[in-house]
Image (cartoon, rainbow, N blue to C red):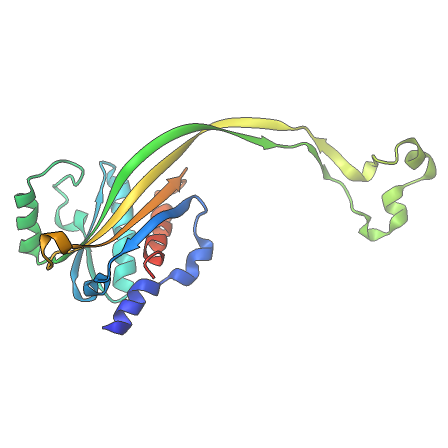
Amino acid sequence: MKKTLYNFLLFGFVLLVSCCSSVKVLDSWKGENLSTMTDKNILVIARTDNQQARIAIEEAMANDLRKAGLKATESYLKFNSINPNKKVDPGTVQALIEKEGFNGVVMNVLKDYNESMVTEESGGYYAGGTTYYGGYPGYYGGFYGYYHNPYSYSTYGNYVPSSSTTKISKSYILETLIYNLDEPEGKQLVSVVTTQIIDPSSVTMTAKDYSKLVFNSLK
């Protein structure tokens, strides 16, 4: 069991260097009873109206858990007809979960979303020129050219004018909560991870990076 827990916490973390820079963990908490999740039948839930995002997040997290030796199932596979972002009677949810034999939950919730204007600067440099590494004569050129303007040479290449671009940056704050349903009501929560995602370009790749970072924060 200890080996399984170790795999659960460390699986895939060596791949973090390839993670997208737009995903980062803001805060992480884990209880002393996190180790109780190693033998649970875990249901992975992403509470969102966006079905593509729901599937991507649930698959990414369930796959990481399964590869680490834990039993995990995506909620869209079992409860596809239920919108996880809509209010449902707690008794109904409990009955469905117990019927399927789940006693652990990894739930992902969108806590905040905002847009902001961002201005990016570019240009203002020379491009396409040669370097001086081939020898001093080629770099400095003739006497007259150098004497006329010692700080500007034809070897600099073409000047790229400076410019700025303004765009809308989108920021998402997500919470990942892990529950042990075999514990009493007040002791079921075993972990909370808060993550920020900025300008995701690919739902699938961002979900994979998100999953790895969440589990990395629990090591």
